[in-house]
Amino acid sequence: METKKKIGIWLDHSTANFIDLKTEKNNSSIISSFNFNVKEEALSRSENLMHNKEQQMHDAYYKKIADEILNYDHVLLFGPTNAKTELYNFLDKDLHFKDKKIDIESADKMTDNEKNAFVKSHFNK
Image (cartoon, rainbow, N blue to C red):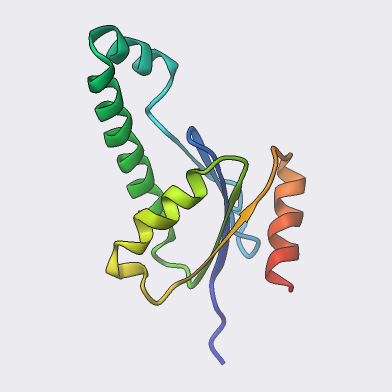
């Protein structure tokens, strides 16, 4: 049987931490470009512009995450916000992900060791 490649991604709207327990590079991250300064600058012009900019930047953030997980068969999305559900919906629209198993679980803020243990526990079920 072929070994499935698995990855856990702890994410909120600002950071995505990748946890691949099989590699040395198990804690890479992607940071969203939508931060407080960008929000304030856009909001100073108009609320509508701020919402559009936020949506565009979140889509770009989710696209970067999607590009990173293309090589995995089983993905765990977990974290404290609804970003995991938004990412799931983003991936669900992309046919590249139709054969991938994607799990979603809620989790609070965690240390790196807690994230690693959470991912290990999930995939050992």
